[in-house]
Picture 1 (cartoon, rainbow, N blue to C red):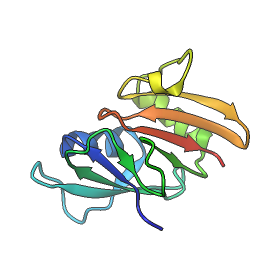
Picture 2: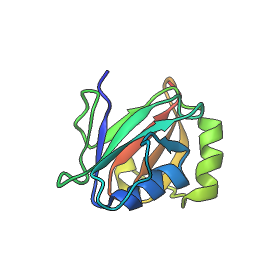
Picture 3: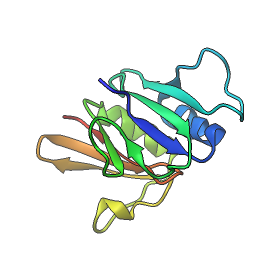
Picture 4: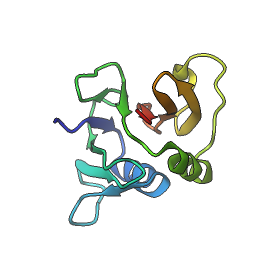
Length: 135
């Protein structure tokens, strides 16, 4: 399985968001520095050990991987109850009134009931949209 890639404009800000505000762990064997071009993150039990590669690049706001090039990624088999508690402690919550595309950067919305289970929508500070789904 290919590890999805998220493109960002600031590698240290991405580390702070994904590894300090969300329950991902950085898989780098050494500490990150501003000159680094990428790092791998991995979720623990809450995030079903999903992995994503965070890359510094010009393709900011385009998230790629797993055959989905629609600007978003779905991470599956997430412990939504644990994740929502973590998100509410660390990120602003946004109550969307229409489409999930209106979620501002750095915010989340949910959980929402969909066929197959619940989902939390989140947009990172770089504009990438991620769905955290139970299914």
